[in-house]
Image 1 (cartoon, rainbow, N blue to C red):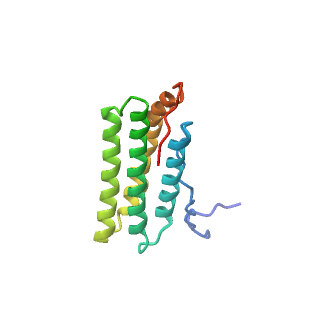
Image 2 (image 1 turned 90 degrees about the vertical axis):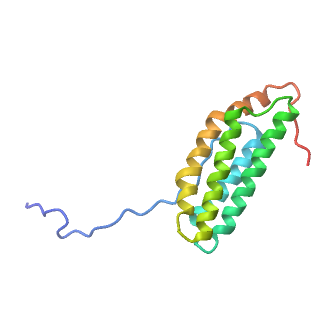
Length: 150
């Protein structure tokens, strides 16, 4: 049996790209986890959007992030606490990444999706694991957990 040299007589096939949904860690607090789920779903839509629809999805993502971050602050305030400086800085950084993606979509340079998937999503995962997890633990150990009022 003779071996064929690589590439001869074989069809070269690129591996199919797997479309995997954005998975975000659950921290065990219903309000915070619901926000993360909605944000993850929006990131999925951005990953799958055509270039014509991406700007609207980016605007929606920014709004979801801002609302979620505000809810975290309100929950802590109602519990008699506040965000630490590093947590608040993470929020500002993630909003800035979202703003950068929006500008990229507006300018038409095609890098907006990459900013979200390669930069914002990993930053968000790290933030949830190291910052939001602590908030959830704190809120879940209170005798009277705070409730957000609409």
